[in-house]
Length: 131
Image (cartoon, rainbow, N blue to C red):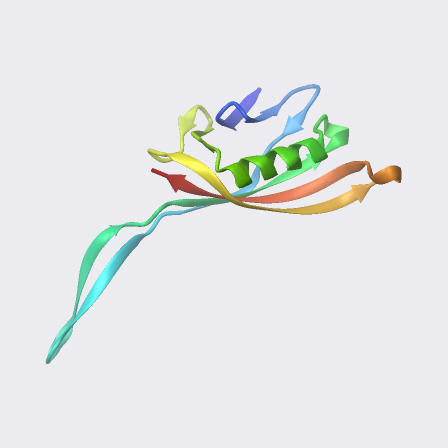
């Protein structure tokens, strides 16, 4: 069953053959303000604009759960370095009004078998809105 997706390239799902999910998702929404100093009065804040939203999450990539860790890491590397943008959907609903770009992916290789076969890895992904 599909949990969500980032375009057609990354599909989060759980089935009998594969478990490919995300964990610990954190979304940051903010705004930018200017502060004007006034003699003898409190500073006057002025709203300037909304900030770009950011999302971070972790993915456990485990070959015993039907995921190809190395291929997935290579895909994420390509998407990050090429500036690929897609809509991010979770539970059938888009997150935010705009598309998302991967601004960083840090990986930990947890289990490596003989001849360098990567069996289990964890990757922390950082995304930012793309207008």
